Image (cartoon, rainbow over all chains, first blue to last red; front, side, top):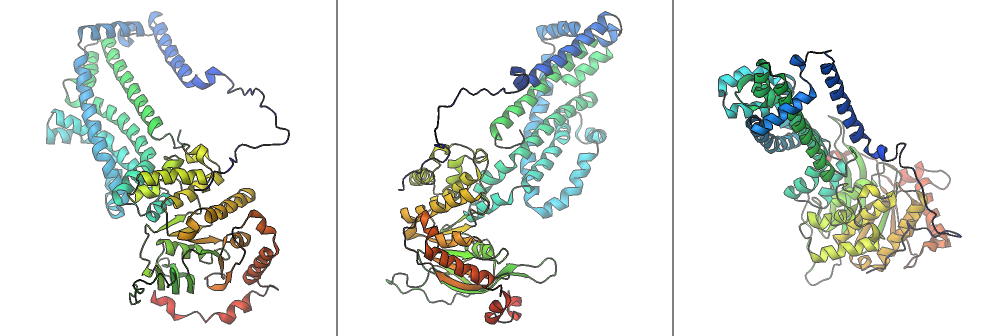
Length: 283
Length: 295
């Protein structure tokens, strides 16, 4: 075979000298510039909690109504200590987990099909946008009437809440695929299954993961709403129950658990995005 | 659509027939709505032999890219016939590969991943293909960035990947669609020299036929065994010039006198020596009429 070329990225200039020690200040804040979002984000939360604590201690707000961070922490310790919180957490986690599995397994293929078959998309377009824009809460009484109060009815509502942004995003991703990619596929006579796996899916992946991100957020809201309405367990029910019993610290503790779970899920998607679509310039 | 009435090549006879046969070929696009179809090329008639490096030059919009796409199987034949190896072109095939005008690399694959795509797509990514990919990446001078993603590369490097991807499938027909058109002048010359070198050095030059499209006349003369000059749109063949510059050619051939003469000749065909553009093309062109409706 032919010989390798001289590398054209290594210039040999006149009177080349050794490279001096290069000093480029990375950002205005140095280390802080790179970790700013984490540092300042934490700072923001700490400040808010401090303000809350101060307001409660100085009596600006009534502790019995608002609770305060130290009481929430104590309550958290009690709840996890005697295990009463695990039941509600498990219930909500099961609902959201099953719903997300269904959302992903159904939503992505459905979005791809709608993206590839334009007749089908045009047929379902109005329905999808109606379902997406009319608050699903409106359908709750009907769903209770049709499916009862059981576990499956609750999962159904969560799926309903979360699946539409994923379908819409996946469809958009498939439709927005770069024409060049399609031409490369055609020229090299790519088979249909390989086209889906090697071109269509990776090309649409940034859109799909944004859809998953939205779906997770909406599914969490859906799970809490459905527990407010038709449940006797789960974190939503727990918070509602504690609030109506005037147990503000316990209610706040439940909310805190939910908040942390939401944060972790979002982070998880961030990690997946970083690994899977690091090539995309969205980041 | 295609008339399969051509006699097959005689058995035991090595390919006497030309590799590519272009026979009263009309290319174009369906019109918007109820409009007339748009004609890109009209009444093309020529043949290309095995192992030839043919360059098509012509003004922009003259249908040279459309012709290349029809060879690749991406554009429809409106009327007439287009045969490769005696068979009418009905779609893309494993015997051909295309170097695109824009790099068209997959950003989620590294250089190596992009280069092996062709073989992978055709389900023949074996050890030999992998070794070939590594060798070709080395040959186009990208060995040191084989694991980089396209977005980390310069425009010239991306076009090298684009070229490598087309070479790895070992096509019998290599199609190149203005691959250096979007590069800066310096990079363009470097890549032209390299393509010449690869064509002459590797075994490819003997087993492969190449059709290269460009609007750069100097590029055409440097690369070609034969230059086919297209007219203003809709494209017809104005002239078919054999370039008898000896091979192997070096970069310096650009400054030789025969080179300049070929260049002058092609330019005058394209633009007319005393700006006589119209009479020349009208004299040979039959009045354009009814055939286009047939397609």
